[in-house]
Length: 347
Image 1: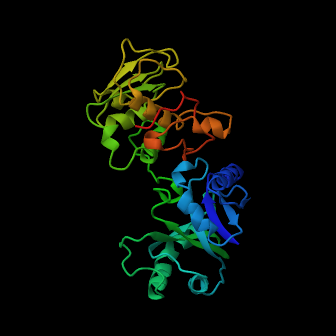
Image 2: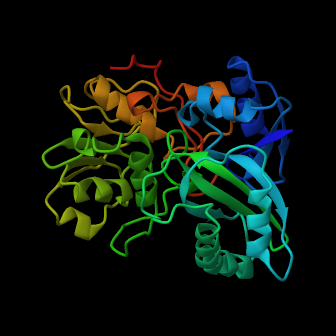
Image 3: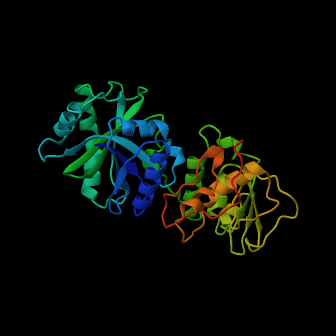
């Protein structure tokens, strides 16, 4: 029985499993899933040989909404207390079939792990495990070498490690699909991280300046105290901040912000705006620019607004940039995409 570990948001293991099962079946790969309980991952089982590798070749991680990341399982290792490194090496040596060439290893923990000792162990275990794997010929000598795959270890506890590999051509850009961000002390609110995460996830690498950058304009509806506006100003953009509430004084002193005291639900620009970035609260927001601005708007809106529904069809109505699907944010809360306009054609 072949297996794949799919990473998702804790509490959404069943939704991720159903999505993966249906998506796999559309590519003529059939299996069933076994969810963990609020640990942020599930195990997808395929009965036939070569089925899991066929799945990751036919289905792109970017086509999935609930599944953030994944890797093919090579071995489920019971870790002894005396020689955990040796147990992993022995398990990999006993794997039937070839293991893709890997230059690095990534040790993961369940997203909701609260065991500080396990976190410390995982951090310290990377170095001796990597060194031993290189010595055993299971990792490339040069950790910086380009390789088609990466070894993955999901450490569920001190007694168990799920070992596998992820393909460089079909995995999340960030480990577990989560950009690790720090909130600067100067940020007016924590929502600043949501916008930064959004453009790291949705904007294609190397094309950030096509959407962000000096001289471009944006409208921030419901702006106070200015978390999103602050992020846009950092990119050199000119921002119209619409909110009846007060804006951060230091942010206003930048000279890049025009504060319009109005209800973000009701406000309309006096004339059509050629915007490069915008966020909105309502499905219909006229006169806010061209299709590209609207696509950015739809992609980023899910990081701001909450909904009680978990309907996947609603999620897929949110169009990302360059074909990226709507994804759940990783910050906090049960935030889902706001319903937006019908999908725009890809350019």
